[in-house]
Length: 327
Image (cartoon, rainbow, N blue to C red):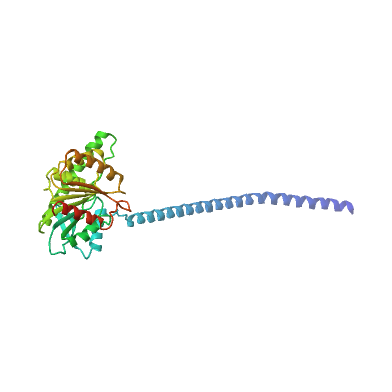
């Protein structure tokens, strides 16, 4: 009985082993095929993801570019307003109670403020010229004359002058180049300013009496040169307030021109003034002494605030000087 069972058991074991081996070999291709399909699917999904990311990046970049282009298209940065035009707008806006009279000189428009005398006796006309970059109502000097002089019989015409010429003083490297450029710039500006003064004087002649010119800073020096060149007729008298020029050659030239003038000049400056004003005042005083200048008075006034003339002191000094020379 045992002999018959063993062969049968052996046969069953052999058949089972054969089936298992065949099943393993049959499963391997299917597993490999499944792995390949999974890998291909993963590659396709990866490529799709990369394509989507690329499209998103392109879309974002195009969106940013469109936004920048739209921003650049709509944002406009305007240049700053010209200071001369800004001052004219301020004059028209704030001096509403004043008699503002425009002057057309060539293609340019300038403003004047006229304050007529308030006394029975008319002394004449004072033409008030502020310094470069200054307005009609500058408080440091001329504003008190504009308000006070009509009470003493003087009609005042205050000019809003053109701004300082560009590139002056010159910043060239050599002395020769600086000197040449400064001479050319001042010559051009003097002709322009002379035309403006001719228009102002014509306006002043519509009022009776003598014409006195009161000028500040650089403009008082430029006017001396204009009168010397006979571009404008000489005034009845000239009052110079804190006069100076920024270069030594120009300062020397103005001092020499002042010394040979034949009209009265009152040369005022302050104890606390611009350093160039103090230096130029000494040059003018020495030149006037050498030439024995007639009707020339130079005086230093005491002040508390630098470059500001004391209240009413300037008016008193000018009135007293005019009385001394017969006006």
